[in-house]
Length: 118
Image (cartoon, rainbow, N blue to C red; front, side, top):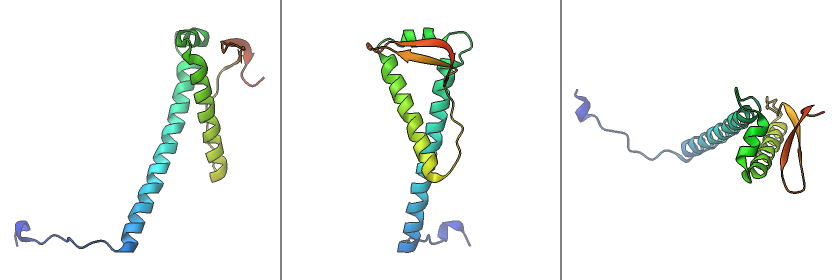
């Protein structure tokens, strides 16, 4: 028999099949989003705090007025990842700055000589 003569199955999936498909897609999408957040968080830390030739302060200064907003964004993202991991009961390996930093009243970020978290 020729494959050109075969009848394709055009029946509508059952409600159970549709629910299984949709819930699988939602779970996969959520997992992919979480994985991308982890990658983005780690890459952001690496770019600022572990650059091969630029200091963190040089990078922060070059960000100009965007530095504070970016730090707040990435800090919020890190907090969100921690919240999701806690709710799911999973351990995640987050990256953190190598050095502590201060933020003055005008929003200027200054890297200190102290290790992060001390």
